[in-house]
Amino acid sequence: MKLKVCGMKYQDNILNVAVLQPNYMGFIFYENSARHITTSIPVLPKTIKKVGVFVNESLKNIKNTIEKHRLDAVQLHGQETPEFCKQLKNERLEIIKVFSIKNKFNFEKLIPFEPFIDYFLFDTKGPNPGGNGFCFDWSVLQDYNVNKPYFLSGGIGLEQLESLKKFKNSTAAKQCYAIDINSKFELKPGLKDDIKLKNFIQQL
Image 1 (cartoon, rainbow, N blue to C red):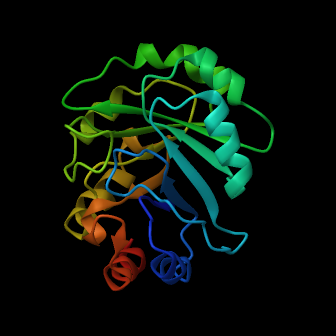
Image 2 (cartoon, rainbow, N blue to C red; image 1 turned 120 degrees about the vertical axis):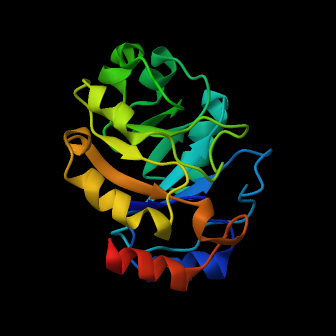
């Protein structure tokens, strides 16, 4: 499985985490988030894909941000429609559409999005659009029947390593493309503990 480290904010910290070579790094362009990035993104290795995270943002602002920061992927964390995803879709850009789960989920609602996105991302339903710090019931994903790979997110930290190893061997994980981590590795919102991250990556 690939790894995405999301909610990066501080330039020196971004570079320190980049040394660990995650496959994706996420940058939140949502003003109401404590992890909202307001500076430029430093130059990263070409092996790391830059993901812009948006919540109900206008198409124009998303496209401007893609160009300004040379983003490789867009993560849509709001109530964006399939038609909205279609307007963003191009050959260069990966589209990740987020859905939040608690104890159950109707996967049929994902079908209209299939032609216009590259991945789904499942995180935990909570008060914030992401970064809530706790896991949902992963066994719900045993019912996942959509022909798109997905990112597993929501409160994943070092204490979930054993659960992740079991999950990787389950039928629910057959479409799991990547693990997404964020708040469980923070010293404060947007500032990651790179030593803790390194430990997680080595064990994973």
